[in-house]
Length: 258
Image (tube, rainbow, N blue to C red; front, side, top):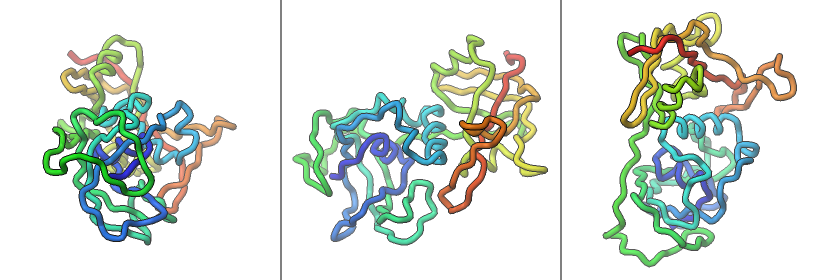
């Protein structure tokens, strides 16, 4: 078993984080291991200390419903398991890879239906008294992503039923999605700079509820403004060694479609 802080533990067991960065590697490739979420909770200052590119991915996955709100993630608990298929000390093309670390390559992630609570963590790999051939019920998270349909005219943004209800109430005038490697080709054209594709409609889809709007022409791709000077773009470093503007797709709602 390996103890990992949140939200990284839940990101691993959801099948989102495919690399675990360590300063050491096991004597041999361990294969399937249990993932233990350590006792440290995610604070409201979490995003202050991580790269903005990582913030983009995590925020999108929370909004899409692939990951619970960070302050609700279980701690001091065994939450699932994953297969470690190897180690890599060189460069790895993954947003989750710290190029200065030993990368544990992760595959076949499973999340327990109910976490095993009140378990104390330890350093390095450690044993836990459990029947490895009779583990608790678990599932693989069906990761939801942005999709395009109707000959490219409609874009579907996945989220929770709670957010669908919020949008249906008229409380919000639109929805934002960070631009990442996972969605840039789906959402954007690169004609005269990065722009939103000419979608006509947007669907906000929860697990059981959906609402559709015509898209306001103001919908587009925008840079996040610099915190110190809003007239300038917020510049960030990307995992591939490049740098650029921190971008978000803004979907401005028009008329509700029945």
